[in-house]
Length: 258
Image 1 (spheres, rainbow, N blue to C red):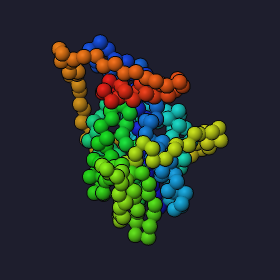
Image 2: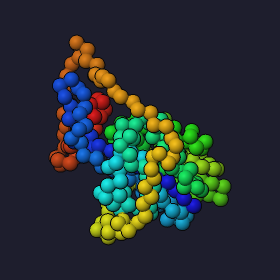
Image 3: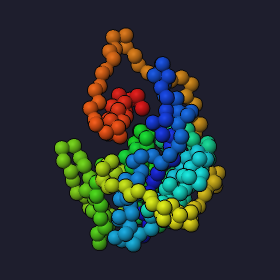
Image 4: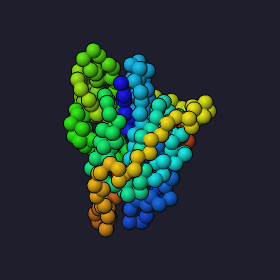
């Protein structure tokens, strides 16, 4: 049995800068593992440990995704091996293109039973790639997943829905996105990092997948600033610096600043 854990090596929003016009400048943002992905990793690893499945990390992005740091970061978090496309033509690719490339990679793997992903990437935060991927594969796609287990018929999935939760029985392939608190991600220790260097990595050339890459160029970007807009004042009350920082970042994201 094979479980794919999707991930994205993306610019860290905490390093981004906002210019006076409200445009986010990503040029100085260091790339890192998207913060929601480790939750999907942990859910995949727990599922694999109970079923004997192999967990394969899959991504498509810019050349930085194949760096030594990127590989070790992912492989030290419970992933058995990596399959990736790292091409700068994908650095600013839209969600539709990324989903098509990921679908081609997954088909290349052969028999895959399940795909897990975080709720969204932290840089774009559209949450569209996973469901578009499900359409490419012809599989069911579900969001809000909190827990899953294997059954004789397939999968039993628990997910959040408005006003509560529901439990579903699935048969066949599925692409599932997890809620942010579905699992507590493990912290990689020195042993995990050293072991990561020995795990296999399959670097696939983009041109070998025969997937057209649409080049989208943003010619202009602006934020809406009505004349009567008022500044919003948010008071952060936290005794611990880390908790205060988390509240500030959350408030900025809710207002689409990050």
